[in-house]
Amino acid sequence: GLDDRFTRVDNGQIKWYNIDFENIINLREKLIDQHERVTNIASSALDYQWINQIENKENILIIAEGFLMYLNENEVKDLFSEISKNFENVELLIELMSKWMVKNQKVHDTVRTTGATFKWGINESKDFEKICPQYKILTDYNLTDKMKKYSPIFIRIISPFLRKRNNRIAKFKKIN
Image (cartoon, rainbow, N blue to C red; front, side, top):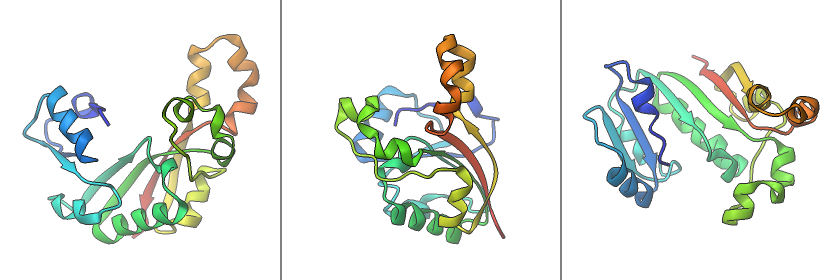
């Protein structure tokens, strides 16, 4: 998408890759300033040719946010299997959707406004290890916990209900 995280996390040394469909990469290049350490790759994440364009395969952080829910379970499994095979020291920061939200996706604003379809979710972040046994969970962050800080009292009251249904950001490490 049009995330500009690089400018917020750049330590002056990292090499950053954005992987997205060609029309999105074209839009990125019109709207976001180019940087010598940022490479935009016009590709589906499921077309593994993008892996060949990554220069350093030793220490990699993969951020997968806002798209795994559109894949089916086998696509998720295959994607992270390919990543594991091709990169040495890998950490993942991935957004995980609950099975409840996939089942009840008609209530989600993204589905209502775009007509998109959610295909995959898991109940607990740790369940990712069953699908992708090459990785071990380090931690996860439920978005409900962050919402409580900024939301009215109502969110605080219903947070136990929301917590089981809301997305999470989970951190995993490849097992060597």
